[in-house]
Length: 180
Image 1 (cartoon, rainbow, N blue to C red):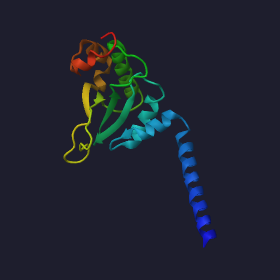
Image 2: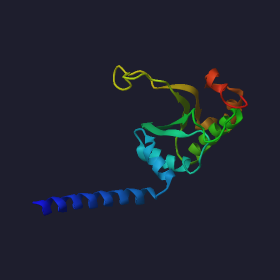
Image 3: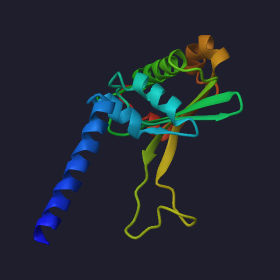
Image 4: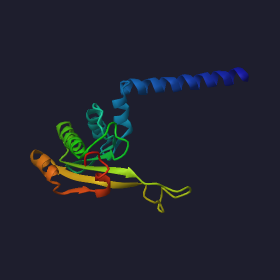
């Protein structure tokens, strides 16, 4: 009996190694591919993954935490979430807005979406034993920046963004950006 159990354990280990090797090969071994797969969401996950491949080819100052693509009929929308904490290097207002412009431009260039909804969130402190999932869940993050851009507005987006037109900023969070 002992030999059978040992053989079974070896078979399971071999299968697990084979699957892991396939996943790594499929991901190409790059962090960008792994990020694109892990952060893709929505009812069009293949489109989200492809868009993630394009977005994660660059190491952005503000981390992209979610790439969501949803569609209803012919309407396809991308939702992108940036982290408002732990930047890869210090960001001031101009640097943050430059990233927003560039992320939106890459999204339109590498997908057929008609709209990009981009928001930035920061985590909220939670107490021990606080419900963070389900019907009684307390929020775990807060929106500190958001903007929506339709493809037909792409050419004028940079000017609108600079003016702050139809852009939500949390003033307290904006003041934490170096150089304001």
